[in-house]
Image 1 (cartoon, rainbow, N blue to C red):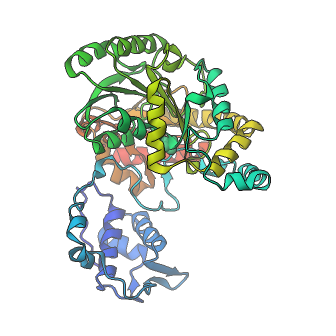
Image 2 (image 1 turned 90 degrees about the horizontal axis):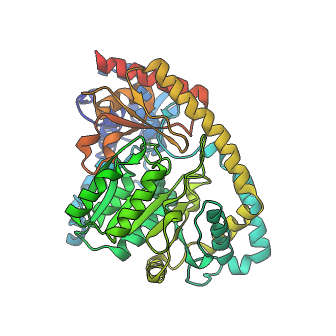
Image 3 (image 1 turned 45 degrees about the vertical axis):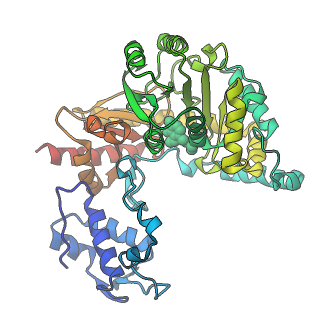
Length: 485
Ligand SMILES: Cc1ncc(COP(=O)(O)O)c(C=O)c1O
């Protein structure tokens, strides 16, 4: 079979193969029941590794387009709806108002758009280890809530800041970190992404300038872009945002918001130093600019002492703090929160109400139950122990197999941020890494201007065992050595 593949393209080879075959199937050029070449044969024909072809086949299989029969081969499936038209056939029939959206896409920031993961891929993307999610314990809490409070739990509840006992528990947890917030200042949101989105939509207008660390969380960048905000980046080093550069930027751009991730920053893993936290809070106050402090993973600390939250340095109403249970518990809960004082709090509650009325009362109550019986703390302790070893494993493997790569040692969180030698691009390395059976988040997606991040890559070490991490870094080293020649 002849499949046009372009090894200079940024699209990984397995994606090129699967896209080509998908098109052939949807256009009827490969008919239901047609036999595909074996992975060995196709790999040989195309002069690529067998694992690449296998990965493409596995993905098409999970899309329901092909099927493999042990000992017989791989075949194109009979479509479930045989009248389904191909996506290319559909386009002309979209109404005009739909066609206006066709090109409105920002693929550069997508890190998780590669479809289902091939089975033997060692992935350094993602968040926590889903195999360790406390599903049984959470189910027990869920059942207890349904048994005891089913009627209230399945009702809307008040359209206010959320389930008050959960907000009170969060206030207690935050107090132990120096953030003094009465439950009345806590608003439960659908993940911290919604918290950030509500803040931006309440405080900002299109064209306003928002200050971010450079690099920063890619989906915050996407949100800011979607709201037509101007993004200005402040470089960071191993002590976090270089706050000494901030005053000039504040003078020059008159920003309307500063977005910071002071603990185990995404993607760099660094923490903002205590001195800089105080400088940042002072500067923002002097220039009358609100700070959003995104503490997405602050409880996952592996060494050293916790630093005071920027919010803990706020005499009141200057800093809006956002947190989440996504990384320290399970992202599918979509449980996050924000803490804000002053008139803005009521505006944020209103913004939440008009957007989705309330976060699930059932899950809020279950989370409350789960946290108050001590299961959350237990899970956290287990995760810290496990992830600390994984952090050490990834750093050790980089030192052993990729000595050319500079990696920052994080004292907590989920990510190691690594730099390839000058002149190398992590975008070009990615297809080679995928061929070797490993993947990571390329650094450019974390920069307001992607070209700045080409040397970097972000490795999530939390999702794999220590042995698998070692194997994954060896695969990455093999990919790198192919690039280096
Ligand atoms: C820094 C940071 N903030 C916020 C979020 C949003 O998470 P969620 O909406 O699941 O709470 C993420 C998710 O990856 C993140 O990395």
